[in-house]
Length: 140
Image 1 (spheres, helix red, strand yellow):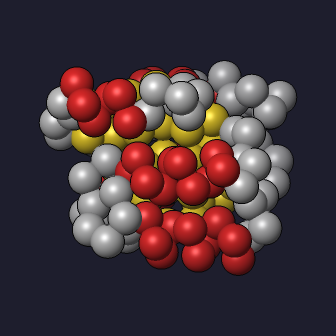
Image 2 (cartoon, one colour; image 1 turned 45 degrees about the vertical axis):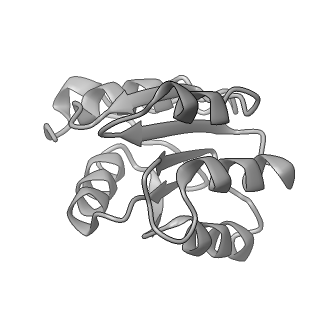
């Protein structure tokens, strides 16, 4: 099974530490380098600390201090061109509208199968290809 190059870095943002650990473990299974953050402000600090060098971002919508929409607006505003995936247990029509102009690659309703997220990241527009079979990822 092939792995991605070490430069395939994914920023995962969620205020639920258990879900962050599952995301980290699951995506590392594919050889991704995972950077985690517990809310949007922390994620923005991590984004800047890594000079924006991420192939993709996976973010929760409902978070304290800075929600997913505010975080997405910030990273798109400073030039991030990679894939962004938004996760949430509930999104209203208004919530979805907040993402309308920010090129979101997908929305995932929690709980979801990690293999579906991995499959979306495999299609990352930056040209990397994740070589592992998404069906081998641990479920949720």
